[in-house]
Length: 299
Image (cartoon, rainbow, N blue to C red):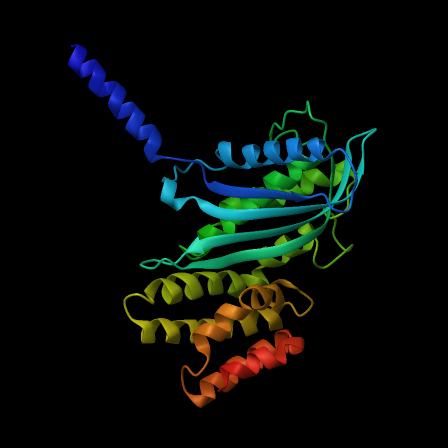
């Protein structure tokens, strides 16, 4: 009986180690623009990182190696000690491993210029979807679901729909908090606009692109580089389709920006001259300011 009991304990321990939360977030806080009270910022950093990494955001169990690596780089532009008000910008980047390689590809990256909230050292960050009444919790819950949803989109066509719908619901609920970034019409690159555009039926090609580019393209590089490159080249037609489907959206342009170096490294000299010219035309239409980078692909 004692042996069976010991085995049960061992099995439970191994089962616990085999599963983990979805995110493996690293949070940094830059306080160079403010003076004093950096200890308060460090407390905030620790609690934000713990909040992101220690809760389950979905019902799915992730193995340790499946956790999504992401960085939240917060710059504090203003801090008011009296009410614990932070005015920050935040650069988010999430990564995805490429199957069969040690390579990590940037899955999503954006800058939030309105990462503003109030936080005191004694505050406990608690997430209740039915009652979102804390700006910092709303921000972190939104980005957690966004990161996970986009990651799921790369493993199955429209695979992140359920999680991304929750992110949209968070946007709706957070509009009552009266902070910038949650409302329509204010900015075509704020939290509302980027997610709303990504989920628009007219932009479904953008989500399909995420699947084809990553799952049918990058994940096949180890098995057949030529086929993988052809899949990546063909997937970029969906990038152009997304641009034309919602001309004012920043989502396709954002993809081109954070994938810029990867696209140049992967596609320079690849495919036929006609294909390279077509890739150049697609990327140039999205961001003419990067013409010198896109021209490398044609060589």
